[in-house]
Image (cartoon, rainbow, N blue to C red; front, side, top):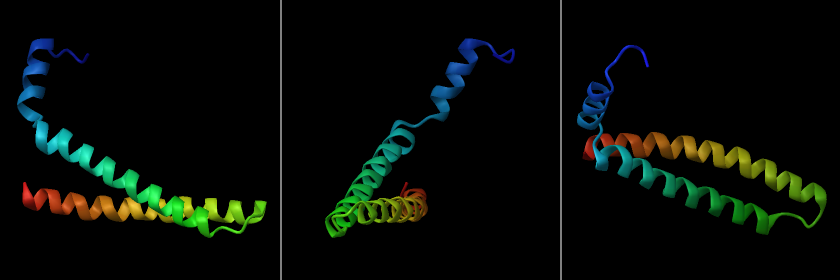
Length: 85
């Protein structure tokens, strides 16, 4: 790649990556984000007016609120995971 020996690269990567704190925490965060987005979408979908305009408003608000929720949850969960681990 950039002049690094393959064996040295993999050795350094294996010593730097911790299965639980890197991959496990990322998996937990992904599952929490998925559940949060699904619940927000369900709520907005059920409360939407049954018109094309109502559906488009529900879709837009779902995207905006879900994006902000994922950002907030990511901040909170990352802070919590760094203090616990």
